[in-house]
Image (cartoon, rainbow, N blue to C red):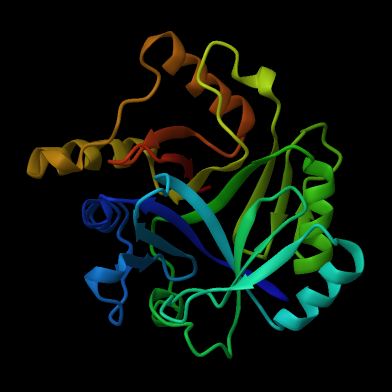
Length: 270
């Protein structure tokens, strides 16, 4: 494949706590080359999870996804030719996971890198190998024009569309292993609950058993109570949010939130 979805990113002042949470519950492996002052850099053997320290004026939560391509100049040429509303900027040289940040025509942000970039280090290099038993399945974004954005990612990144024409309003774009789910954003989807803006909605993790993960969550909380998950589906607004999540993501068997409110879809492996 021309492109590989190589990481998802969270912004959090609790990055050290989330580091322990994801390593303990899902078995993700840490990078050997990034220091704690740079946040958290872990992965499942194919896709990385980067948890960036929150800085002043920056909101917390799910932030973006990242893609590694064979040639970024090819992507730039495709954007110039067909998508003038898309753009890109160079990232700071101390970032281990991307050289460039780009946007699609709806303003959704993604990191862009290629194998030859000098600052591409950390879990995205070191953990390339055997997959963890619990591993990323997908990243989902909410966007106003899902059909057009799906075409953008197909044209620019050569992702392959799955399950087209089945009456599902979502688009599922695959790099051969990881899926980018594109969900239509409509404000009337959020009746009875807080309005979520466009952007990253959640990410998915394939697990051997939802029941086993729930048992492991209980055991983990018993060992270290600060690593508890945030309850979902409580009260009228919470129930509406959880119902919407299930309607929008048919890949999910169960939803949980990590210790800093980020939404995770659990999917049992076949």
